[in-house]
Length: 499
Image (cartoon, rainbow, N blue to C red; front, side, top):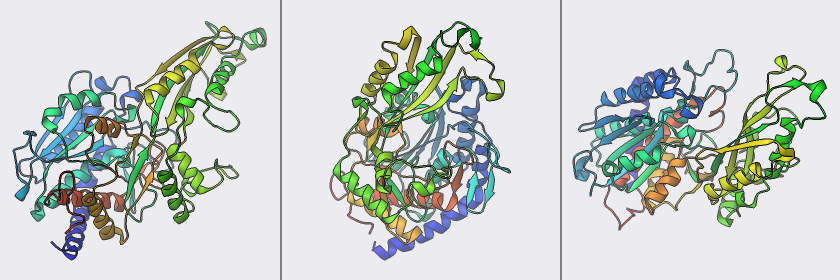
C-alpha cells in the first residue's frame, strides 16, 4: 500500500463516517442525551433510579443493530457496581486469529469511553437544557454529548467503516464504563473481572480527552491527577442568633478559611503543600511553550472570564504549563450555607465544603491525599470539630512516546480530515482509566485523544459536541485500527508510516 492509497482510503472513510453520523449516530446520541444518567457521586440513588443501566442498554441496543459480523455486546452489571458496556469485535481479514472472547494470544486493541454524566450545573442559555438535545450547525448541545457519549459511536462507527471496506484489523474490545465522573471507583474491579476476556492489548485508545482547536487532531501528552476532599467544620449543635453568639463562638466559615489557608495561599492561589508539587520536565515545558507560540490565545481566549479579570501567569505559555502541571484547589460545593435570600441573622452551626485538588502528573495521589488529610484535619483551630473525607484519589498520567506506526496513523488521519499534521499538549483534567491501564499493562502503547475543545463546556452549562471534530476522531480510530492490522516491524512497533 502506498501513501497515496492511504490518503484515498481515509478520504473515502471520512465520507462514510459522515454519512453514518448523519444517519443513525446522531439520532441515537440524542436519545442518550435525554437520559439523566448522572455519575454515582451526584446521584446517591443511582442504582434504584436505573438511569445508568438505561443508558448502557440504549447504547448496547444500537451496537447490536450494527453490521459487524461476529460482534458480541454485553452489559456487565454486578449488584452494587455501575455497569460496563463491553463490545467485542473479532479480527477481520488476514488478522483473524480467534473468536470473540478468546483473548489469550489474540492481538487486541482496547478502546475506552464512559457514559456517566456530570450534573446540569447552573442555568443553560435560552433554548438549551441538559437533557434535551439541540443541534445548531456543527454543534450538538446536551449533557454528555462530548463528555463522553460520542466515544462509543466513534469507536463502533470506525469498526463499521473498516468492515464495509474489508480492511484487515485485529480484534477490538470497546469498553464503556459508568463511574468515570466519580473517579472510576468501580473500574478496577471490572478490569479484574474482565481480565481474561480483554487480554493484554497491543494498543489502548482513550476517547475522553481534549483538543485545543478544531483544525487538527490533538493527542494528550499528560494529565493531572485529582484528589476530591470533603471537609466539614462544626461549631454548634444548632444555629444561634448572631447577636448572641457573634464574637464569642468562632464562625465556622472563618475556621474553614483558616484550614484552607494551610493548603493554599489565599492571595495567589499557590498550593503550599510540598507533597502536591512537582518539577515540570524540560521537554514538556518546551512543548507547551511551542504550542503557546503558535496559538497565542490557547487558554485565555477560550475562557468565559468576566471583563477585567486578571488571569494567573504572565504569558500564555505560563498558563499552559500551569494548567498541565501546577497543583490547584477549587471549592466545588458547599453545604450549611443558605441562599442569600434565605440568610437570617444566625450564626450557622457548620460549614461543609467539597474541594477538587488537581495535582501534577508525577505526584502520587495517595501521598497527596494523606497530606491533605493532615493539613485540614490535624490540630483544629479553636477546638472546632473538623471532619475530613477523601474520595478515591486518582493519579495523573504521562503519555509514552508513540510508536512510529501509531504516530503515522494519527498523522494520516489528521491530514486527511484537516490538511495538517496533528499536535499534542498537556491537559489539566484527569482520566483515572489511563493510570490504571498503565500500571496494569506496562509498555502497552496508550493514545488519548478527544473532542473537548473550545466551547465544548464539559462539566459546565451548554455542553456541546463539535460534530466535525467527532467525525475526525472517528477517522483517527479507523486509521489506528487499520495500522494495527498491518505487519509488525518488530515487537511493539509496526511500519514507520501508513503504507
